[in-house]
Image (cartoon, rainbow, N blue to C red):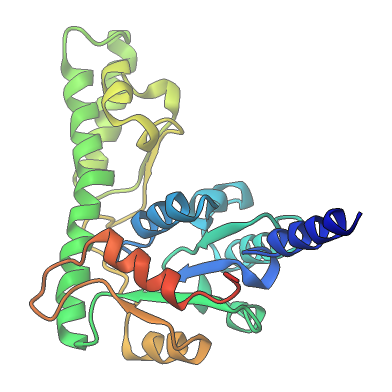
Length: 254
């Protein structure tokens, strides 16, 4: 009986690890590497990774109201499993989200560098890489597939979709449903295209800088756990070194 009680106490203590306000929260600007680090951290600690960007679709998009609702949901008791919360680049700046995170012990902000100007260079470069992988490359492949003789769609359907693709490629707004994307493109781009493809006006030229000095000030008012993603020499740090730094700073491990 004595040992059973000890086991029950141990089990209850284990349940509290990384649940509630002990969960790990990763913040930071787009393209800094939050999702990559969250995944590696989840594998290292055997924790579920909840991507708020992916979850956001269930709340109707990325408007301020919807983003606040998404955050309120993941920090509620409805989602209280041992987990890592991988925030989108701008959610923490929405409404009262910053205040909702008060009391959380394991908040980490991933930034490119403490050198502000260097950070801007890295983020702009990362933004272009992201546009290529998520937007330019898929839409160009879709167009090429539609223009191919091997495309499974009728000529009438292809003509309509080719027009939409060309509009998107030129920087315009457009939308393709999953059933309007050729199988060859779906096979190549997997998760990116499984729910369809959409673009906003001027998507190819707009750059939303979510790491201004104002944003940096907000980040540091939330936590002093600031993690640099790049070395002083401008090289991206290894995943393992960042993960180990986060684990070392985590509270509630014992």
